[in-house]
Image 1 (cartoon, rainbow, N blue to C red):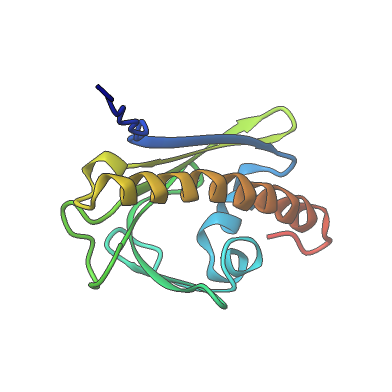
Image 2 (image 1 turned 60 degrees about the vertical axis):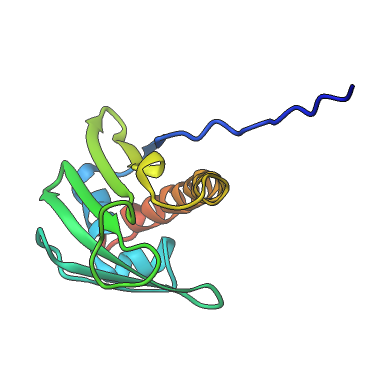
Length: 161
């Protein structure tokens, strides 16, 4: 008799990434909330209506454009948005994840904590949810490393804002 085993990946509900940035919270706040800065480290192009309920459009050349809805704007501490996944203009139940960025001042700059949650609530097949979570986990590592380098360049420029 032959017994086949089934291996399932553990699907995280949230991805958390924390970094320290050698720039003050006011500078980092602008970098994570202003279109001109988002296009410098996160996407290739960005549009953002920075208010709860405002729309975001992030475009990566060769990868596509993605919509999001701004959820929380509490300068310079908390910024949150919800990705609009799949088709549609509005985040729908079972079709979006929430990204929360929290900035905390430190002696040398800013501690940034990013949490993207809601993967287990996505109404997709499990393998697609797991693949999306894995892709975003590695993406946040890369993007936040780019944010750190970008923020430190901005903070050291004579026209930091």
